[in-house]
Image (spheres, rainbow, N blue to C red):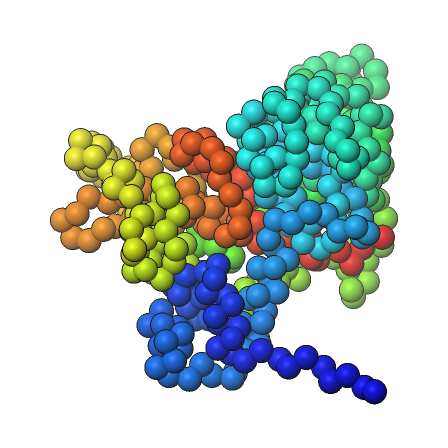
Length: 435
């Protein structure tokens, strides 16, 4: 007896499923239609077209693979997560079948958020090595961890801080005819710890992430040392590119991503790794989106189409809590500050956004006054800050990602994090070459 395949869900059934975790506004943005159109489909006022099924299925697939989840029982590869923050890079590599076997993060609040979402039991602040029952090892200060104690892994991930190197010291050793190598060239910087772990563990591949200014930092000398260390000293083949998160989320956020492979064949031939192959968001017809994402996909709709999430939203319409609206004194100060710099010919000032806008870069200082991204509440009304949930969306974290810390810590953590879909796109391109 041959069993019939399960019936494919209808467009409306897919829509109803997605609406459990997405607002009408977010689905509308992903489909490039008006929120009212989605509302009419959901209310069955008009028929949800069959042709959107493929797009809805793709949205469901992407959200399922980007949801925080435990590692697969048989992972395709293992990775280490250095300078892990709250796990944005980890999400991208778990989505392609990787298993995290080592995490290092020194900030106790970031540890709290990371452990809460990935199911780790740290038993308080970690300042050394902590091995869990599942074999995963968590460390605090990576500078205090001996590389041989780190579990073997196939891929190393690191969003390391940008620091200058002592070029003068290296030059002096050169003049004396002494070999220095990366141990001396990078000593005292956190990149040194990335390099010594790569040297010891010899992963197949790595992904390093940093601010765009790494390229010009210290007149280009910093990046020159990094390149020479990775290629000449450690023997890896690398490619790098400044990737703008605006292709994936409504935020101008440029970050340099360095990808390295031990096997140089990953960069050879017609099917080679290339940043030009990165998948962008797709429209309902499967083509690349021409229109970039806008803030409508991030902002709380405040119309009852999403469930309230205290303390960020409240009431039957899930209105944003009043505490996020700027006080009269702060709003006056920001307006005066902007006017003063405008008069001086400077570009400093607050950034005001609405549903169809793209935001400035979210920074770790957002908790101070929120000035870089203020949400307009209409003419004559004081604007408001983003809620931490909106910050999570602005960085591309899944709706299932929980925020167990204070607003101040949440703002710092998301401001320091990565655009998750951008990292996921790079991970997808790397997957073909990870054995």
